Amino acid sequence: MSEKNREGKRTARERMMAERAAQEAKDKRTKKLVVGGVVVAVVAAAAVTGVVVQNQRSKPETPVAAPTGAIGDKSLVIPSGAADAPSTLTVYEDPRCPACGMYERTFSPTIDQLEDQGKLQVNYHVVSFIDRSLGGTGSKHGANALACAQDAGHFRDYHDVLYRNQPDETSDAFGDKQVLLDLAKQVPGLSTPVFEACVNDSKYGGWVSAVQQDFDKSSYKSTPTVLLNGTPIYPKKGDEQISPENLAKWVDEANAGKQPGSTGSHGQSPAPTSTASEPNTPPTAP
Image (cartoon, rainbow, N blue to C red; front, side, top):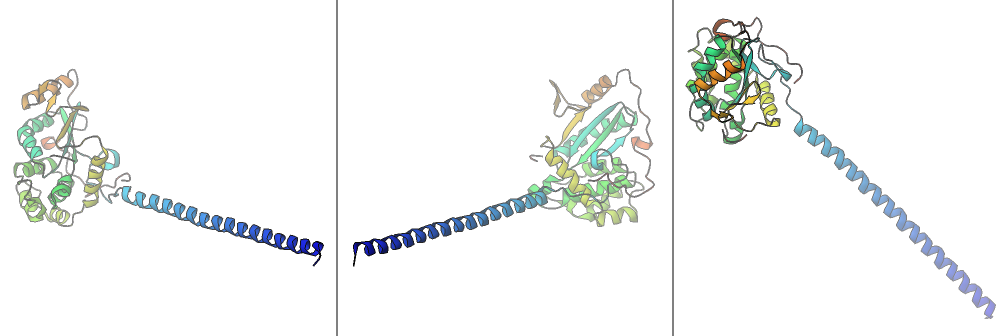
């Protein structure tokens, strides 16, 4: 074979090898692009799924109804006393919280008197985290029963009765709705078929959950949390320890030169004309 022919065959063979190598390189690039695209798509899908799941987890429960007269953002607060009172006491408490029971048994007579004098309105945030910590349903059912009492115009009296008869924190006695209904008999005019149905049906269960979710997002991490005109006063205000006498003094100091508000019977709002109002939309050691 001539040198020329051998050179021609070698050149053809090298050209074929070069074309094959180029094709293999192209195939590898294509495969990488496909795989990469799949990975990107999977990551993107996972990201979307993660957002959806996170949105589902963080989406607050929207109460279908709030108790009559509830105020504040999303109607999560139950007021007691004159709406035009010159001072406001804000209270976060759980029906099962023993420290809340001690606070209420110590201060409720003074607070009721200040309400009756038109000096103070109390805004209650009825939370229910102890169920989550200890199990049971007493916090939620107690909070729902308080909302039902608000509908009937007897929130304050029933609230005081619940805390005077508060069971041990670990007993979950308020998880028995009959206990809540029996205690209502101590409040004249509260024990009615409407109230009983409201308690038994957990009418305000969604509202109770929304109040707790609002507390979870707040800067307050324990109960009772008590503020006078936005300033924390429990267990002390500045260097002064809270006491019934100091509470009355602090309210009088805050109200100096201001007219008292008008009050209804026992410092409560008049009995409502409807059973519920639609809302605008929608822990730690006790």
